[in-house]
Amino acid sequence: MADGATQDRRAGQLLIASAMIALVLANSPLAHGWHELTHARVGPMFVGFGQASVHGAIADGAMALFFLLVGLEVKREWIEGRLAEREARRLPILAAVAGMAVPAAVYLAITQGAGAYRAGWAIPAATDIAFAVGILALLGPRAPPSLKLLLVTIAVIDDIGAVIIIALAYTRDLDVVALGAGLAILGAMAGLSMFRVRRLTPYLIGFVLLWLAMLASGVHPTVAGVLTALTVPIRDSSGKSPLRKLEHAIHPWVMFGVVPLFGLVSAGVSLSGGVAMLAEPLPLAVMLGLFVGKQIGVAGTIVLAVRAGLAPRPAGTSSAQLYGAALLCGIGFTMSLFIGALAFPGNAAAIDAAKIGTLAGSLLSGVVGYLVLRRAAMTACPPDDEAEAREIFASDEPSDDDQAATFTLRNLRDEG
Image 1: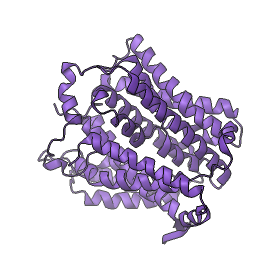
Image 2 (image 1 turned 90 degrees about the horizontal axis):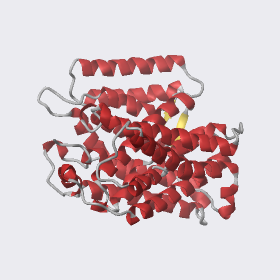
Image 3 (image 1 turned 45 degrees about the vertical axis):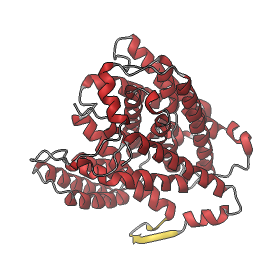
Image 4 (image 1 turned 60 degrees about the vertical axis):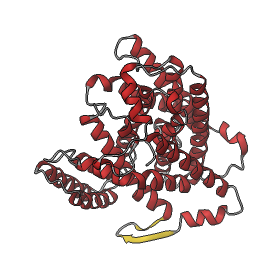
């Protein structure tokens, strides 16, 4: 079985390949046929919605599994992992919040708050976990374990923020009855956890019902993934973890199936306008929000927090490495494409412009971040980090609870 770093690298490479294929198709003679295919109606009829398009089925349906996976690993880390202690949370939370606020401010400053583009303020606020950690994994053991932990934690907190933004800022025409039904389903699932129901089947049934209720309510249905994760029990009476079991079961399907598929149907955009397109307000705002806003928000906050004594510098890291990690936070790809489609519903031109900005900003952030990290003097792990380094970079045999592929944060978990 491949170790965690290898899986991260492969997932990132697959996502990059999916994006490249989408771009090639969108700029080839097959572009029209590809567009027709991704917008073809498939699947069952939903009352009030009809059939979903291929793109819609992936973005609204399959991506709910992505959010479920994110929710599961956040809950585990928050309760019994690296984020269980308040001190460990402080630096990544501060960096993540600033890393969302500053890009949004850069975006609004460049677009000057124009009514037509204002809804896209959250596009450069997100960080793509698979891409960012995949690029960091290319460095292998030259990247300190503490740097990996910081980057992943910031990305995860960004995802939490993105889910909140999606639920609050991109919800239109609420159906109170459907929303009430969703809350009732969520309450029933929470009750299952309180009464120590540890079988996963009832939670998965509840997940599907909650997704349908969210779809009908007007709240984006992918929010059902995170809400479901909050109700899944982390331990049973025998000490086994239903949460980890579910996380491991869906991980390979999400990271090697759902996410690349989303990239394949979402990243395609015509580049016929050339580099001049990046000078237009919307793509320029997204690109600079990701490339400039992210590094200012994340790196600036880390420097200020460490100097003010609010949080210690991550062990074994240099200033150049922290700056490189801040640059990688500007890879917005998956979540930025996702939010861009929500921000401009029915406006294909604006969605394409946001895609161009997202791809350019993510590419700049990834390439420059990798070069900075590669050139940075990589120091040996201090004694306290040796066990953690072995856990991240060794290919040891999985335990009974670890039979499936493992998500990035689990590889960073402190087994001690």
